[in-house]
Length: 443
Image (cartoon, rainbow, N blue to C red; front, side, top):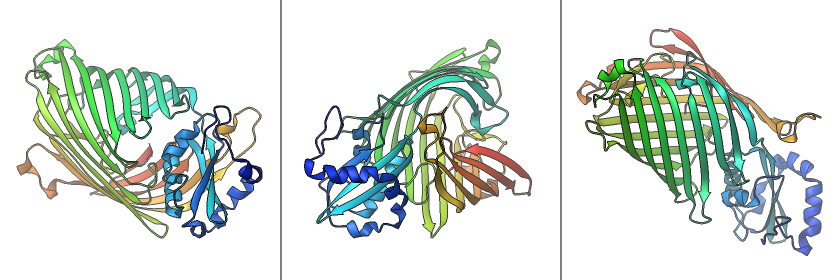
């Protein structure tokens, strides 16, 4: 379909009346969409795709994510996958798709409700999933810069891990080439994970990647981390100096076939990574290997989730870049415990079941804009989980008897913008319980 700079789409005259009528009755059509048997359109040629509701987002951003295109044969599973891909952009409160047929062809209406994209925002978050490490501050973010799904963010942090951060990300460079770029700069202070003394970091990173198709990508990361310590802590530096400049190169391959990133119910994710760190730094030379596999499937409404993760470090790693459990990666039931070494292994299993199925609400407001009041999602799921893992320094010391294990149950609230707010209660092997509140899912 041809593009028009002013209107976005040039609609052939023979289809104008049909488009106008469907646009007029779109709310009613969308409301009854669940009653439509989409399989009856299978085998027909997709003649037109109409996008409505996108005030800022470029139509091209929406069309390029869809796995069903004009001129292709309609398939209901590809339509569902296209809807999921648009939801995974996190640009819209709601995405709905409605096909309608005329003889041997089919047209599709894609209706989106855009989110709030640009705003100054207060910062309040939990560092390393630890409620004793509260960070706060303020920042400015545009989650859909120029309408092309680019991210632009500047923020100022205080409390735990104070500093300044800048981020620019473009997930799609080049039409059919589909490259990825990311620029990242941050200065911050943190407590050393092992000994607790302060570290002062100035980190710069450039990411350049390539999507081989919509679900497979390779990303090359170049980083420079300048780390300083106070004079009284110089003995912890392998170089014997107050400052290290740690250059690194990382290669990450990702295979992501999950239906929804925030709360998957089917599909799988595999992330393979290798990092070569300590370049040009005497006394420091180490390589890290990452394996992270997650699998999801559903038995009717019951969601089964599993994960196997390992991070292994070989060589002489500095004190500020060792392998840990108890920070970004944790075992619920041992949530506030920390373990460090050269190698880490985690296995997880979970069952999740909807109590209140996902639904959408809208309300009128004379003060708030539409993107804060229209098509706001809400759902409630319950879940149980089992997690186990360990950290070790020498492979001969690895033993299943050294595993730390936790299990428990929780409630998962599906909310706009936050995506998932989770309340868990976990137990360790001895039955000691702990209450955990977090955003998003650990796997």
